[in-house]
Image (cartoon, rainbow, N blue to C red; front, side):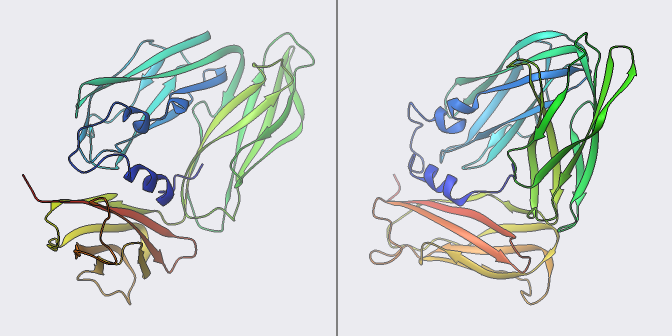
Length: 351
């Protein structure tokens, strides 16, 4: 699905722990939920190298550091960036895992161990599995990559699937995606290239109505095999129009004494193409946000946002439990293109 920074998802995390508080016993569930720790590649054509991306979040006010990521089986390869092992508050990291259908056959299972040494030493185990079938081959072998697409233009790519098994009745019967902006069509009759071999073409399209942002989803091909061998997931990637990035994705103002305003901190909002900020909303009226040093009437690719918290003793904007949790949303002149980030602080005397 589109990787859109979700205000509602992260607001739910904001109540987990106070700034500086030690990680509780259940915090790993919020790094990656148990339901998201296993991925089934299901049917994998021989030669294919499909990829799944596990997403880890830091729900804590403390720094989370990944010390190692290892796999139990050579049938999987990891592409974790070792230069990005530290997750600050509410940041996320992607751990891409590929199943090597180009080197192995048959049913494969692998355990991915994520070792963490801050804020405490612990491990999180992820699972992948898949059935690599030597009677199927697919082109492209890794994933369908649309690259960069102009907004409202869409795009189409074609994949081919070849069956070389003994079942003369074998067919692709359907193709689709849970993403509403993806369409797929099995075109024409299966072409028999030689005895026992059938080739199928599938046209895959990103619709012109797709919103701005990055797409990381799956197309699922359905054959007339018996379950579970009938499903063949194919990864899809695309970047549509302009993509906004916020750095940092959550701004921690640390510990501030009651009634004492904070110093001004900066968040950088950047886009893959120029845009104009038309409105900034914050759900806490005591958080001040201003565009710093940039003319808002012109379009730019980078905007520095100056942020501070007035930290009132009482009234609007005062955190009842001593924790500031403020969600900020930025609206641009590009229809449907918004960005979100979060401001947090602990209001108490130091020491």
